Length: 221
Length: 357
Image 1 (cartoon, one colour):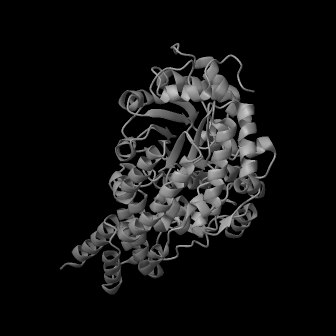
Image 2: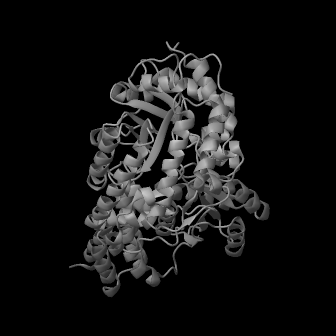
Image 3: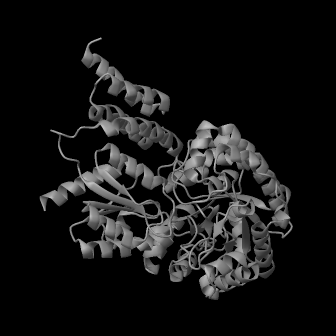
């Protein structure tokens, strides 16, 4: 089989393995990508990320729900863990941006945050995940130490949501140029505006497009 | 600040709404739960663990706000705590499990869940005493609704939601076996609550919504258990009411499973695009309770804005009865109480029957 044909076949396997949440299928295809000498980065972008894009569409169309998306994420990470150590960025565009992400203090609901993190990762961002129940100062320190473009804050409760407002003030005080995006059940676009955030994401699939817009705006500054 | 110009009691209004009749005005009741502690001046952890203080808090909140009906929701970990889940009781926040230490650490742990007697279990007894106290204090004139979390929700508190969702996909038989045990406990808890004479028991079936899982998966994983729970509510003389604050809530499959007297909801069902469509499609099948958003409306808006939102909802959902004006979920525990009062004022000002369009 011609090399290009084989490459496309393997990338299709990666893509469909993610969509059909078949971890073993993705693992086998990812190993074949490496053993047969194909490019790991292309495997991630044209295989795994392409699959996740379809998953995002299925989620938007209410064909897939959270359990299915989590299964797809497991399949995606199975491939990502194999391919990522072999990515050679030489001669490629630099990463799109760096993101600090976490769930604000007092709140431990992190499914949404984990899905957003995954979308950032497959889109080529460098992600610094602080986890859940993160004190405000930790967001500030991590943003400064990594010089990240974006800080993404998540909260699931009205009580913890108020911590976002304080975090935004502190983050902007230290670095007025940092872009801050908010997400989580009680958060709306109106609240994001009210708190002084730069972006708001209703769900994981639009978080990344919102982030890309923000990074673009930042680089034009 | 109970309104003075009223003729019917809150309970009578709610009964009329449940019978799809028009009362003197639209019954109303923001779901003031954790916020009640602030009226009585106690901390969250006291309110969540001392039933006498919780009763006094609700009685005082009722006096201040004048709800036609009150809900006995404390938090979503009542049952999980009694199954052994370690808990945190913050001073100023909702109690919750120690999420980093779930009691169900592996799929095999589902099989270790054993029956517990809710009549001897600390937190479920808190719920019974709280319900009993509020029934005695307010039950003659105010609708009183107790609260039971659905079996899948309870498991999410003991396993973590993320792992539970994956288990529902990969190991459904293990999850279902655990739900069978939990349901037996909940049936006994419903019997204990029924002995208080409580008017209704709210079954929280959060997972039956587009926010969480497909209809097919919910019907497989939780639907049959909710049928048993709702039937038991009716057996003990309490009306089953569904609360589901997820997006795209599944009215159809929940009505099929539970035949609830009412559904308390925060967002439109998956099969309705507008509140008008909701009223047309489900208005004669089930009493509608809702659906003013706790966030941002109750949390961030002014009382005048809240009243306007209430007016809009009354206009569409109240004609013909079968509607209780309320928040779509718990009134924010840290929210401005003036907004809860504003909802009652809106019911009085805009909700007098017949509704003027």
